[in-house]
Image 1: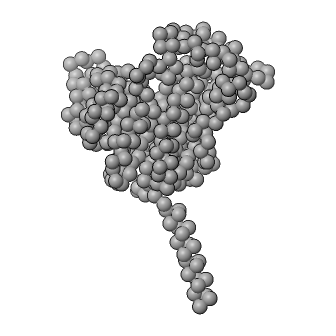
Image 2: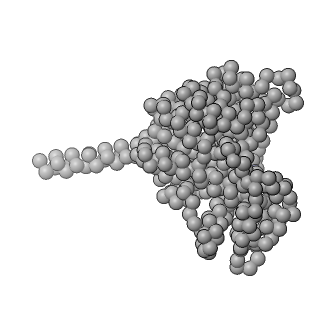
Image 3: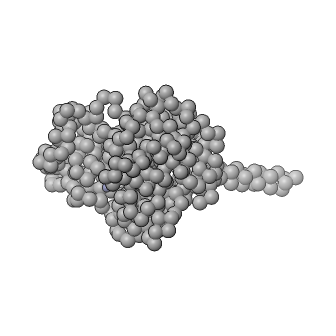
Length: 403
Ligand SMILES: [Zn+2]
């Protein structure tokens, strides 16, 4: 009898361990900070402490997550990736050459996990604060040997049947200078998508089965930068919130990819103030997901990573100090009216870096590994060292979707 009880306890324990290991994430959020290096995030944390009058680093919502890992990002042909090759790695689990999107180096189509997850009965949402046919969001639904084939990539969007797309607009909605070409907005509508322009319009149309949320019909613009953002502009946190309300209607669950695309753009300009504001904006979007996680902690996974690092930022360039007062001064002096003058002025931007003693090595990308943070079901799988191609495989595994 004793042996029987012992055996029973052992089997019960084993079953518990196995079933814990196989727990399914019903709701998965993948946030990609485009160009977001460890240093870009640390600068933001140091800025938060600075505005409180302290020396230190105040954690963000996502940097407080229990799991931290890193991912290597090299592409199939370069030690330093571009966004389309990195996006392809993160969406399909395969490396490709810089400049290619959703295809192998010999241009055979790859399958993004968005399609695999959608086929498994989940709702899918793809969103960004740059244009929806820009490299990172496009990697999750498009295929092209050239990432700049915006028109043909945009034509793929309605064919996906994914429940939600959101972003600034389409780049080249009528193709390359051909105003007679059918607009990508018309393609989306003919493909069964309801187009919502801004949050108020979204709220009026949110019962539609498939939604494309942009700022304004016909637009080819990005969502405005966080620094000096005009009142009422569409933001990434709003897009994520809108996406949740559409996707959570699906009973099987959902997958969403949300890109903070402007971190890359501000870091390309070596603009410290702009980069910090964009990282904070991504953190606000993560907070929206985290509030959802708190309601469904046993069924939700949130992963934050980057496609590559941009700018080669370092906190310090001489001596044992950096001082974020010039950055804070720019933040408080910037308004919607003067922000463009600041952002387009290389002299002011480099003056701020010089005065703050912040170093940048390049106006391009770097080959540093990028951070990975995670919380929720299966989050432990993202700890330690991994390659960017491992991330979609892990997500499928945790969602019980065949990769
Ligand atoms: Zn870039």
